[in-house]
Length: 115
Length: 113
Image (cartoon, rainbow over all chains, first blue to last red; front, side):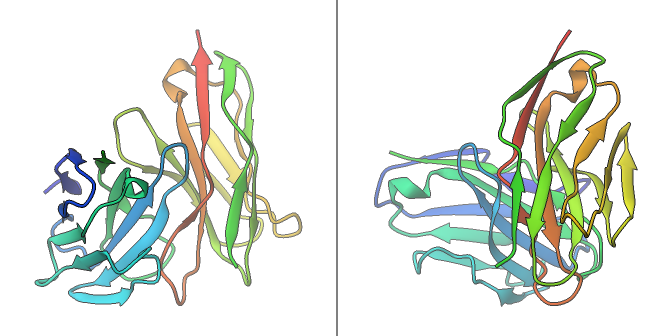
């Protein structure tokens, strides 16, 4: 596609519910990132994939958060037993190459509200 | 650890005013520096970047210079327009090692006609 696509755009979950957020990166992009952006804050790194390999998951806040990219294209961020502090916008970004001085293309995000 | 600090917002200016948004960083080594912009309802977009000391990034009338001695990357524009109203994020990244962007907290800019 022309850009990074994320779905759903908005998600309301009851506390304790599991959610799955989807990211479709730009076709052929090797690198894929997930970020969490709390209200009024800058994005915070969650995890990074190079193709299907998850090379860095140091930003995942707890073992309730899990990400996968099984075929090296679409990625899913799963949050189990959601808590109110998980409410945020979840951003996905992709890049054609690994590393370098290039910026990344971001999706519009999924706004998760846990009630 | 590595971090980015931006001037507190919100910033409100009149059209054609001069803009400065301050950004300083703390890093072990010499990162690449970026400014991203987030327009209402849209994703983050790369505005400009600089990869080494004294480099100047520029785009759409905005510019920022990588100052190693003051560890700063202030964003400037000589004459702002209403369409520049957005949230601006300063960020850093290292070429080698961890690939993640480290962002500042963002500065909301509103330009009044």
